[in-house]
Image (tube, rainbow, N blue to C red):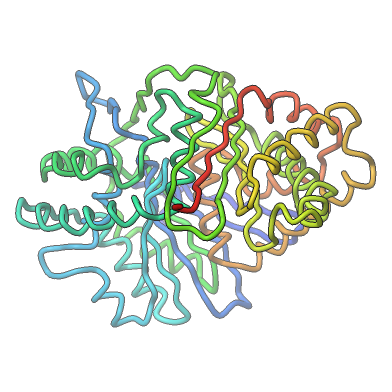
Length: 430
């Protein structure tokens, strides 16, 4: 291993696991999580760059630059191409399964495999560092992504979510579809793609996570060989101020569905920045106590035929400049479900969670997270997203184990305000 890399071993006695965190000399943060008894390996190479990054100013830029919506997703598509062919054809020779995704705040390239780990990793490190955009290939992609956008316009699950975000957020770009619009992607050029690539695909803005049956020294030696050092750089994300209030309490659309879909969102103030691991753990326990299958609310909604087991769920949806708790599912009467959720929130505010319900919820969250450490894909993806949010995996697990009811109720005080809630419904076409 080169002596220029800073290597830290991170251990956790609770789960009996360890990983290596490396600040590579190239500028890249690397996380290596050996799971010697596993047959498979999963690697993800990501950049802190997603669909919300439409206006930014990087080190050396004299002015902020605003770019068309959907460009991060567009760039993800183009990265698989090179002058010599596409990366999927190279992966096919190794037997690895490759993919990529763009979310609101990051873009990730990944593969999983049971053999030829280092060959597959070399391909990953190579193509993500080798952009190749021409006028002809960029124009060709506009038709492909245009079809994808039209497909999502008719997708009920996608529409119920983005309609909710439009009801919650006045200005934040989280309300804009990740793929952009037909009109916005028509403005994308090779020059804009190179501008975004050179800004956000700087290794100082990226991370690599590899979990599975790996030899850390061999992985690091490959990184030493493949990574091209990036000059130090920082990117300032620029967002319009977002009011704490919602836009509208209700939004509806009719599409081809058999049963109405709904999403009920509670917008949270982000004036104090993103939640730390203690607050994140407390929110997860709170939502488990409130709406998991073991909760009184879930049981009563199910018994009254207002939800079904296949679709009802909840999540804490948060990122740079946005945070909401969202409940979703199918229901013949979404308004009745929303009312019952709000009543249960008020009851817990008055009466607390209760000793036994709190213990059950905490144990469920803790056990689920420990079980997830057996899944190399979950490990790698979770470590990457935690890293981009300046959080750490084992600290989060410790925070769950050490949470008390008061800390969970403190989260309830700043979340789940009915006055800052909105419901999105997709109804069947009559």
